[in-house]
Image (cartoon, rainbow, N blue to C red; front, side, top):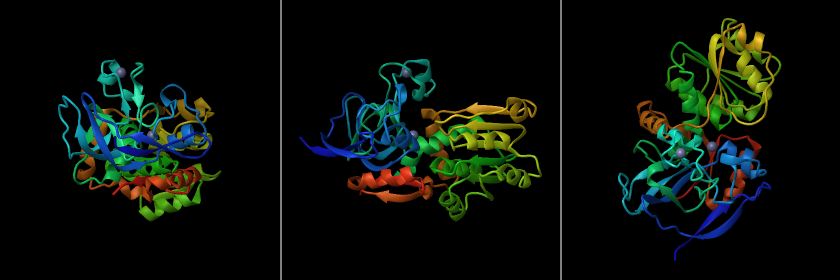
Length: 348
Ligand SMILES: [Zn+2]
Ligand SMILES: [Zn+2]
């Protein structure tokens, strides 16, 4: 039986390798030869440092990586749509398929016992092959690279959902707080949806520098004590119509809400942490709306990969570092330090 190496995360900021049998696709399953597998902030926050996750974020010692893209090399019985040779990205959660959340395409919210996220409760993308349900595959257009696809599996998909949730459009000045990979995605997608001006805020100089280098924002602000004044100075004193918090940080979230203009919309997409707000001055008196947005639906992921070519947009431009699987430990370490864009493991 053919063997492959897979990476697991023991939870003490290390990576371990194990040997596995190359899986055999069963009924309506496909075997995907991995081509790119990117690291998500939640891999670091909830698995790599320590196993913090509970329920849907509980890590069960499987092959890690929930942003897999690759090529189908084998199909199981009764596949209905996908064929050998096709390039796919995986929507990173398998749902039960029959609950209301699954029927809406939000397998992320499926609460049936069958629900399993790749890289959390079932084997994910950090191995040469990944066994996937046909139903979780999304066809990758030729225009998109495998790294583009991997970036969409969680990160860009999650940002696209958040940006649609607050309906970013040409009337808006958009503010993005937190300039990790999610923040970079939010800036690109806000621009694609027509935002007329983009303001970016972070505290980490390397991240601010990367946004500048990639040309993703019109104004880059250091999120220190003077940040709110700087946002007002860039918006005729009024703040921003559409705001996306990718920081997951209490001060970042305060800046996001306070940087939202009267009648504006703000969405929290960065995870973890807490926030303290003063509802009357921060929200109520200025008629603001605050949204939460978690991951995306299978349908919206499909919409995103269809539209990226139309926008002539490659998510892989946010990828600053590539590693081979044997060096995936260095990839996680780099991502943990946060002084990088998207980090990818790639195969020939
Ligand atoms: Zn993720
Ligand atoms: Zn379900």
